[in-house]
Length: 329
Picture 1 (cartoon, rainbow, N blue to C red):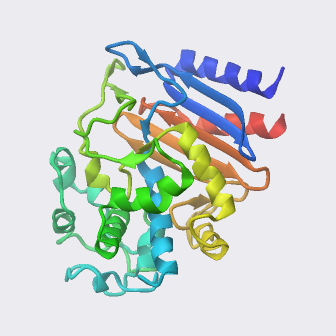
Picture 2: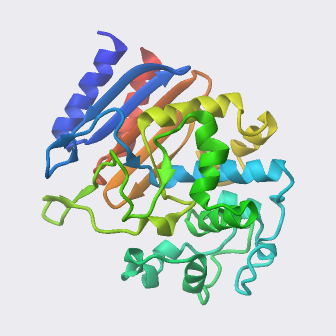
């Protein structure tokens, strides 16, 4: 049995057992081994997912924000050692917190998404940067900058706001001109929840009784920089190739992106917008109605891309099993 047949059989089982809905792309050195689409992009109208269906990629967005910051740094527009307070005149942001700390989740700044003030309804309202900062105003730091690690979205939202201030473009326009258009990623972008995006899958979840329902409304623009992008598996394969060929930034900058800057756990470190493990690097994302996974095995040139419009899939199990089949075939 070929590797493509084994992988296709694997996902047929997951579709049946776990109601997997989305796209899967496995490639080695840019050559596609498996490109599959499963389930429904829109269940109400029985619109199936296709290889070119767009999905919210949630926190995979952080890798694009990190690339944008590195691009600006190489052009002398900012320095990663700069204090966050240099760009945001906000007295409750820690003076010692730097852009490097924001990039690596080591600033100690609380994650606005986890605060009751946000979770109790603000996720449905459009927040400006000032509104987000107001949410954390009276919340103590998690730790002194550089003295710990805690994953969150506040730092990457601030980085997106910084990109807009320095480039004098919107975050989406900046990414399109600096990263997406040069790479030919025509099906990737940033949008509000109410924006009409052609070919974008609707999101689904399960209620407490296990019944499939529409995912609750989330204003995706509140995660600009940290989780606001949509893309396709095909576009993310272009992203995969670019991360080896440094067409956007220099090889030195790419090396900094994947460096083990901060220990997240004994087996996981964080770079700039990437989790780095012994054998692979990658990032995942979750928002109501979607989950996404992007993983690279640099030594083998292997890329695993999974984008789903179901938010309840056992994604790590699927990802690990897919990698195991691809690496041993």
